[in-house]
Image (cartoon, rainbow, N blue to C red; front, side):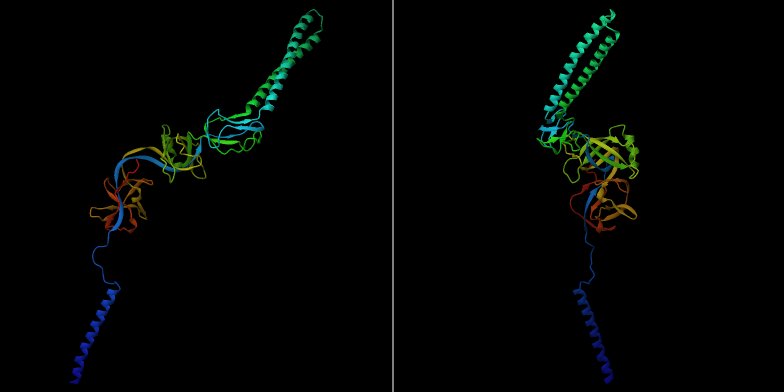
Length: 383
């Protein structure tokens, strides 16, 4: 009897201990946040854009640099003291404008000396020609010998050559005087002035007095892969539009035309050099600048265009997250024809009016709910 009492009394104590353990575990789980959550996961904030159908330019992009069409390193052809500078550093000069004046006095003196020598030799030539006429009459009457006549004839011929030489010396002396005034051969902007007034300049010195860069019009040169050369040459019979924009600048892009295609492909890079000419009336393009160049070969109508940031790339290919009507997304593979910083031309996978995610793709999977933040952006910000 005692044994049965002991047995009956031990069971309630074990059950009570088990219930206490379960209750403690439940309290611990609640304290540690281990209780299972209920309800759908939170929506992922994203931005979206709309796919459109529009006419798109057929173009390719390259990095180019600006260079002047004409660069003139102005040097002196004669030596002497620099007397005057006719422009300010950085000023735009025009053809024929006087840039420098070199002391002309020694060259003017040489010119006067040459003119005096010419006058002297002309006087001697007049006398010699008169002797030829007189001796010609005398030799007919045998008053002088034939040898004397030949002598005066030779003297006259020598003086004629001397007079011609004197005239050449005068022309050269006048040229030296003209070289004392240096004018601009082109319209352009001057650079740093390397020689100041009062200094002596040397003829054909290695250091130019100043360098002039022609800015209007101006070149942008760039290289493109040789694979694009057939398309460029096919369109080169007509003016090919080219735009140039300065990176990280608010300056409007410049519009010009393709003006030069090099006659060989660089073997080391597999590229060909091209140049475009821009009017540059506002002088926004500056020699030495790097620019983003776009060559527009034509237009394609009715192309499907999506915002470029919407296109993602995986090992399986390119894809976008398509926004469905219930604010969930679907991973949609796409075939991209071409893409730039703004637009992606889609050959397959999207239709006009589709909405695609343009930012926030890293947190998305197919079927995830989204919350659109900001405005809806179109896939055609630039035509």
